[in-house]
Structures are given as C-alpha cells and as structure tokens.
Image: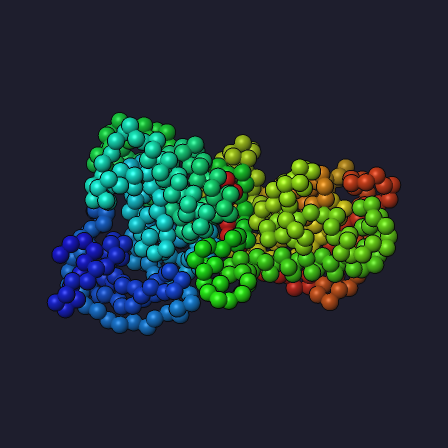
Length: 523
C-alpha cells in the first residue's frame, strides 16, 4: 500500500499525505464545501501501535485503519478542525493552514503566498499542502514549464530555456492575479529580492495580501541535506550558491490592514446568475461598513454650524458653505473611497499619493533603510505575525483639521510588541512629556491638496498633547454617540494664510468601534 493510502475494510482509500505526516493516532478525510474549503467527513483511527515515520516527506502510511462517521461543520464556514495544529507536523504548522478565521479571509479576499528557499527545502510539498487545504488555489512555478512536453509525466530541464520558464511562470501568475484567484501560490526559490519583485508588484497592482514563507524544515539551509533531498538533482555547487545568496526582504511598511478586494470565488458566490445583488462579500463588506460609518460621522461633524464655519474659514470657503461641498476639500486616500470618488490620474498629478486600503502603519521600514527596521523585522513577534495573524483594533474617534481627516486607533497592550510608531516625535516648540506607547496609531482617510499622509500621525500627537496638557477653554459639543472636542492650536500650518488660530476637531466615540484586521506588510 503506497503513501497517502489506507485500508478501509477490504478497500484502499486515498488520504492526503499531509494528514499522515506527523500524525500519531488520527488522520482525516474531508467533505468539500461550496466555498472551496473542507469540513470533516470521517475520522480515520489507526488501530496499529506503530506511528508513521517522519524521516521522509511524505512518509508511507503504516497500519490498518477503520472509518468512524463524524458530524459535519456548518457549510458556510471554513472547518476549524481541518489540519488541526496538534495533528500537523511542526514543519508545516502554519496559520494559513490551521486558522479558521484566516481561512475565511484567504478564500474570500486576495492572498499571495510566496514560497522561498533552496531546492529540497520543502517548498513544493508545502505548496501541495496549501492546494489540499484550498482546492481553488493556483500554484505557479517555473518547474511547470519543464513538464509541458511530456504532458506532466516527465521533468525535462533545459538550462538554455530558464528565462522562458520564468516568463511562463510570470504569465501564469499574472493571469491568476487578473482573475482574482486566492490563494495564489508562487513556488520558486525566490532567493533574492529581484526574483520576487515581479510577484510583489503584481500583488500591489491587484490588491493582494502577501505572505512570504520559508519552510520550517530543519535542513532548509543544510547544503548536504538539500543536495540529497531535492527532486531534480540540483548539484551541490548551485545549492551552496543559493544558500549563500538568500537574503531578507523588507517592505515599505508593516501594519494592520483592513480587507481588500474580493477573490473571484467570493464574487461568484455573492453574485449568483440572474441577480442584481451588488453587496460586497465578507470580509470586504466590513471594510466598506467601516468607511461608510466613518463618513457619516464626518458629515455629522461638518453639519455642526460652529465647526463648519470655522473649517470653512480655515479652508478658504464662504461661511455659509454646505457640509457636502466643504467635504470635497479633502480627497479620499483609501479604497473603497471615503465619501467622494477615488483619486484619478488628474488628482494624482496634483500631488496626491495613490490611495490604498485602510491600514494602521506599525513601522515605516523603507525597504530596510529606516533605523531599527531590520531589528524589527527579525523580532520573533513580527516574524510569526507575518505568517498570518488577525487582530482586533478599536476606533476611538474621528478627527478633522484643515490638513487631514483621520481615525484615531487604540491598540490593546498585547499588540504593542508589534508597534514601533514614532509616539514621541516633536510636533511643537513647547516642552512635552513622554507619550504613551501606541498613541500615534491612526488611519489616514483623506488629505487636503499638498499634504503628506505623515501629517495624519502628527495631528494625532497634537490631540494627545492637548489632552495631556488639559487645554483650557476647549469647547465640547455633545453628540448622540459621543462628543466633539474643539482643540485650538497655535503655531501649526494651514493651507491658506490665516492669522486665526488653527483648530483640530476630534469626534470622540462613546463606544469605540471594533474591527478585525490583518497584520502584514506592504512591499
């Protein structure tokens, strides 16, 4: 009986190799759900005393098995028991294989999993595990090029066609990204940044979350073990070169991201044939709901007469301007758009940055050039979270100045080990005390012309300082779901010359709004 098979009565039943790799007493079969994931169909109990060996990848099945029916999980959810961590070998125990909620995000939004490592390190086996976990996954590999002539039966490597093989892989990846396939798996060595650059650019263009994954196998950088284990007889000299050249990849910034564009699978489920349903699928629907509720709070603030008149004066409008017209002074920096239409090529020519998904920047890395960014990237907490971690953040309120519209974010203490924002940056000439960790956390929603997104964080610090100093004569306006605080600041810049004091209006919510977000990186 071969690897991946077991005896059930007198018949041989196929079982995923991953289910047998590292399993002690139980492996599983699964029933496919409409969303492309699986739920338990049967449990297969090993009646023999012997446990499968884990010396090979994957090992052969050992022992006799019998089938016990089990209860199906809800067909609308990803099965939490699929590849449970206690039954997974440590080498392939990754959150994107075991976490139920993350599985929902991967199936319904867009994820690109870029595998990295020398030949023989376990990348292709990990890709197979991902394909088993997510049957709608697409695996793009240059190796696929060498199987074409034989119809997938024989690997015919030709070093003279290496560029053609990678062009073939690039085109496959682009086709998948254009369709919105998720997860999209890149199974190449990806040793250096330039080898990953094409795929990272695709991810940015088509709104994919990127997870860079190096196998956990203990031999992943052992040149002798890699030489003996790799499938295609790559010589020792080439493997030595790849191990030596392996380099870390640093993003532009790290942070917490709201969900982005839906996968093609989520769109198909949301828009059944013959319907006009335009509701966004989960989890994008939660992003849209957050932006919509924030915009309603923004308009509620602008509809306060004293607030509208003061902002109109600061922004160069007549005192009797309507709230809807005044709102056009700021341009949305997020997708889906905050209020008005998204930034166009014309508005970008006026100096506006390209809009992005709502996010809280935890560390601006500048591709490893910022001080402390490499140490941050190498920390255990960050390395583990980058493999797939969903967290809860709290929106404390919305603030508006003549420069920015933003959200103030509260981070729980357990997230502060991922936070390296500049909480103690100097924002005025007045002496300041040490500010609390995480106080600068924010989301930029919209900007005035010529204003950098960095200014949003500066405005948050001005609010923190005003609260700490106990600013006198601060006007507080009650609201149905909180209160608006009018902080009058001196010495700040406004887009139009004015001798009047500058104002920041902070709409503090009585009950913070909770959001689930993904910790990740923008490459």
